Amino acid sequence: KKKIGILTSGGDAPGMNAAIRSIVRTGIMEGLELFGIYDGYLGLCKNRIVKLNSDSVSNMINRGGTFLGSARFPEFNLVKNRLIAINNIKEKGIDYLVIIGGDGSYIGAKKLTESGIPCLTIPGTIDNDVVGTDYAIGYLTALETVVEAIDRLRDTSSSHQRISIVEVMGRSCGDLTLAASIAGGCEFIALPEIKYVKEDLLKHIKNRLSKGKKHAIIAITEHICNVENLARYIEKNTKRETRATILGHIQRGGKPIAYDRILASRMGSYAIDLITKGNVGKCIGIKNGKMVNYDISYALKNMKRPFKSDWFNLAKKLV
Ligand code: ADP
Image (cartoon, rainbow, N blue to C red; front, side, top):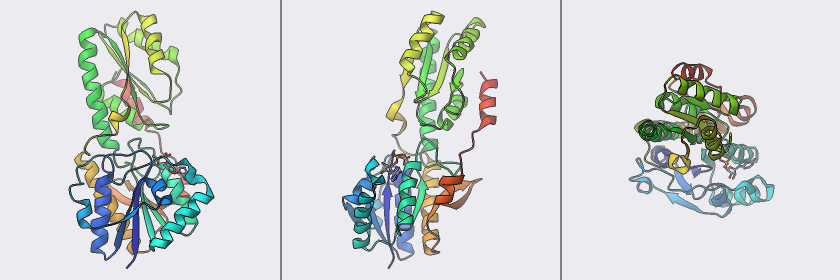
C-alpha cells in the first residue's frame, strides 16, 4: 500500500479542510494509506504525523482554517532541518507528500522533491499569488469577506461624508484588492503591481470630491504604505474626516464559499489521480475551469502570475 502524507503550510485559507477531506476520501478509495502532518513543515521536523481515515475528515467540508494546523517555519530552508524531515518521512514509510499552501510552501516542496521525496502542491492562499492557477483555494471566500467589509464601510462613510481607506491582504499580489474594488465600487485602488504615488491619490480624491462625491473608499494592498499615515495626509489636505481600516486576519477566517469547497474537492481528487499515475513533482492548478499540472521547478522558475490589466482598466472606468 502506498502511503501519502498531507500537510498545510503558510497562511491558512478557507477550503483547506475540504481539500484534505477530498485527498483522504479519494485516496482511500484508491487503496492508499493517508497520513496527516500537523503544523506544516515544522510538524514534519517534529514528527507530528498521524494516520487519517475517512472519519478523521467528517464535518470538515464547511470548516474554515485547517484542522492540521499551519506554521511559519523559515528554518525549513536549512538542509539540516530538511534532513530531519526526510528521515521522519522515510521512517513512516511515506512515499509521497501533498502540500497545500502558497508559493513559499511550494519552494519547500520543490526542495523535498529534489531530495527524493516526491511532492504534489495544491494552491491554498487568500492572496491568490500562486503560479500556474487561475484561483487558489480560499481566495474567492476571502473576496466575499472583503467585499462585505467594504459594503459596511460604505454605509457608514456615506452617512458621515467620510473618506475610508481599507487595507486588503495579498502580499505582492493585487488580485484580492482589485477584485474587491470592482465589486465594492471603490474610488481609488493602490496595488503592488502599479506604481503608487501618494500625490496622485490625493489629486484624484480631491477631484472626485469637487465633483460632488459625498464619500470615497480607497482600497490598498498591504505593505504599500502606512494607511494610518495616509489617512492623516488625506484628512489634512482635504479637510474631510478620513479613517483607515486594516481588515487583517478577518480576511482569512470564516467558512469557505461553495466554489472554494468544490475547487478544493476537485484539486484533492486530482492530486490522488496524479499519484496513482506516478505523475508527481507537480503543482496543481485550475485553468479555464479545468484541472492542470506543471512541473514545480519549472513553474517556480518560469511562470509569473499575469496582472489583470483589463480588470484594472475597468475598475478605473467605474469610479
Ligand atoms: P505561503 O506558503 O503561504 O507562501 P510562506 O511564504 O510563509 O507562506 O511559506 C510557508 C513555509 O514554506 C515557510 O514557513 C517555510 O517552512 C517553507 N518555505 C518557504 N520558503 C522556503 C525556502 N526557501 N526553502 C524551504 N522552505 C521554505
